[in-house]
Length: 420
Ligand code: UD1
Image 1 (cartoon, rainbow, N blue to C red):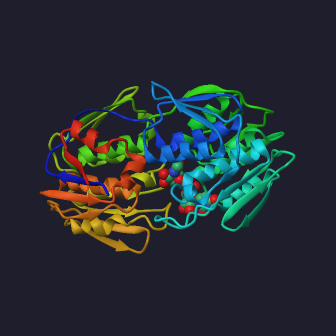
Image 2 (spheres, rainbow, N blue to C red):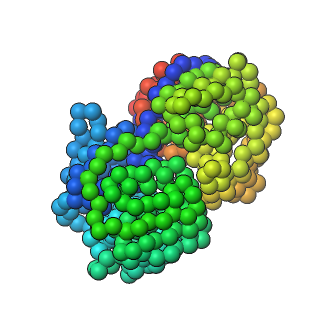
């Protein structure tokens, strides 16, 4: 099993291109099921999760080709199955996003329940409730969600009890082919939801209000083919910025969308970073200074993202002062704390959702283990700061969401190698 070997103590510096967004690519690839015509997706990142989604589309019978420019071309004209099997859904929860498109287009779908997940129970009740409002019969049986709407879905008013990114996306896709108009309320406003809405409109859907808490979708009879470029990955960008801040470095990221990183850039400035932005670039310079501790509380967009909580905690471990970190989105997203304490951090946990980080002068290398995707990148940041050589085990978690992380860190001067 691959591991990362990191020798800490070097300030990251240099220029880096940010990849396409995983969390945008996954729903958009699922959305290609809504049309019989070919769809071309550009800027999809090369990640395990994207491969899993492509494999799922292939299992359903879609034709998927990756061209010489690394565009992903999908044609879902002749599906052979409407079932997303347990083996694929269990490895990636986002597989559940094929439910809405399948039931809208084919009148039936069986998708395995995602089941337990390392970062909490993560139910799908809002997805199911929404599809029922749109007229689907939904049965949860034998570990599968079985939805049917033989005469097609019908638009309706859906109020989501909580803000869910995947729920909003599944229902947007389903409503695109429903008869009549759907109004989704209490929607997620994440940039990836906006990217999906723009993608659907490229195929001829009539989605409006994406990026606000109320999205209206006027159903159309069919969608056509088209071409879409995936937005930049704001979590990847944020992770490298935080890594640069923690190591007292100076980086410039290009092909990035600064507007999608508002809360994160503000927190980095509070930590003492000199942050500059342009249309598609962000630069960060610590001028060699140690970061200051900053409190973080996660909330849905435009609040501080849960996907960057662990990385900020890593920076706080060596910051000047004490910071509190409150996790409000997931119930069990502090698994990195124990591992960071093995590196010499001083973090106290107060229940499942609150941690207090007392900044220490330095961390020291130790063997650690990656537990989930974002927790893994936080261990990479801690290892980049720690004195000595840290080996991080189980980095398959990192490969789910960070394209060639060791190469990108090497490009910034990090002493990082993949070993087996
Ligand atoms: C997406 C992102 C993930 C990010 C998360 C929150 C993708 C592929 N993944 O995950 O990286 O951490 O948003 O920003 O885009 N919930 C329910 N019922 C539901 C649906 C969700 O109770 O029907 C709860 C979840 O358990 C969780 C919270 O709502 O506590 C937010 O989940 P959600 O926004 O749906 O996350 P995902 O779409 O799975």
